[in-house]
Length: 418
Image 1 (tube, rainbow, N blue to C red):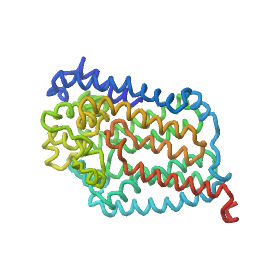
Image 2: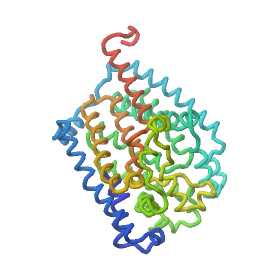
Image 3: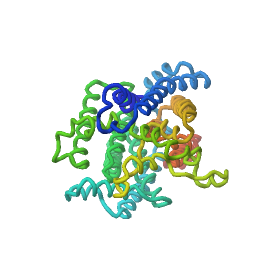
């Protein structure tokens, strides 16, 4: 919910009532700014209401008590005290992730971080980032779902085992995966993934300990602030213009407050004025869309970039304009999309939340729970809540590991593992 407040609420309020004259809002009519403000306010009110309704519908009205009980419990074993077989499976998956990282690095024509060290311009770095994230099919899946997400998931599970046992080999295994995850998440110089990773570790620590100290919050905040400043100085080309760091329109503060909302404004401006509502076309995978006779359409978050910044698109330095999920809901069905999607997303997220609160507090469940929370970003569009291949893939891996743990807990294993 903090993302709704920090990235959406303050942005739409300031844009509507106080900072309508800043350059990023100069071409946005008041009517559009009011519609966006109304939509974000609707989400702020009715998203938690839909979650509360979900609690009562699923027979769990007192979620707060359930959460406190969950936090008070210690980390439990998956199937045995040392979970040797599960750890061996994690090591095998770690080899898979290392292989995928090597494949991703080898097949990427440019290494953005090396280009940065060689003094490449911000435009060249932006183009390299786009190239590093382009692709489709098996190579794209290996480079992103396995290299990035699998490494991140394994590091979160390893972190839980280290906190549970305190053993040196668990600590070394986590340190190795932490280095690999940090490397691959910053490989294309993206700012969001590495910040989300650090926040995931912080949230995981809270779930394990049941609390977080003020000192830890300050340390985390300082580390994230320092990382943001470094990324803006060297990646965004602010090294020669450090005064822009405090600029409300071009600095990191402005990007946080207004950047996540820019896609909503563009969506309300260009749909349906210049583009027709897309319907369910962008939300279905190609195979299902063809079977249902639905035309597969390009996601609106990519289309609106062509209107918002055509020059950047021509230079091949533009990706997608991520924004709050109601942005894509609007481009699909208009006001009905905003209305229905808010209740649907609240129901979807609360179901995941309740599922894990009812699962045993062990390293496998903790790591996967936090990983899934980091996958679903409220400012990542609506399509992910309908069809998300990474979510499906890692859910299969999760249940395969759970099945292996269940099999072993029934005593059907080799004596060497006792």
